[in-house]
Amino acid sequence: MRALLLLAVSCALATAAAGCGGSDGATSFSGTSPDAWAATVCGGLSEWTQSLRADSQMLSAGIAGGGNLKTARSKLVLYLQHAEQNTRKMHEKVRSAGAPAVKDGEAIQHELEAGLKRAETSFEQARAKAKKLPTDDSQGFFKGFLALGQDVQTELTSTGRAFDGLSDKYDAKELNEAVAKQPACKELG
Image: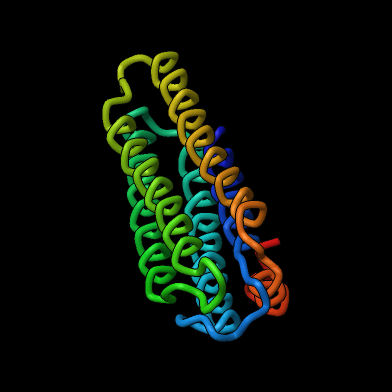
């Protein structure tokens, strides 16, 4: 099934987010130290990725196990609800890190949080659409299921590209060095 597509896109988003940042090497900026920021952000992204992976495996097993379309739809809706909740928790963890103490740290944090909010919204919208998938027409169900997966993939890919652009937009040296040192960041990429 295409449920793994959601996981792959989610992992790509997490990996892209971990590589963003900026600094001019000065230490006179207010905010969270780059090392503490990277640990919190990458830790949150790593936990998020692991939860999405586990939920995706359960969804795949549940849908592949047969059953009727109502059960499949219920499992998909539950998966997307968990993805939305886990994305919200991860977003809150990233927000709690505060802006990194680097040049343009506030702007970096703002753009990162805006991207994570878009990811959260994409899961929320996908869940609403999944609730409307037909359960009396298998062809219609699977066509809708695939379209839903494509919508989420498109949104998360767009968000990932925006994250990739952060390191081009901002001087990322000090923050990238902090990210490179964190074990949780290494797990992501």
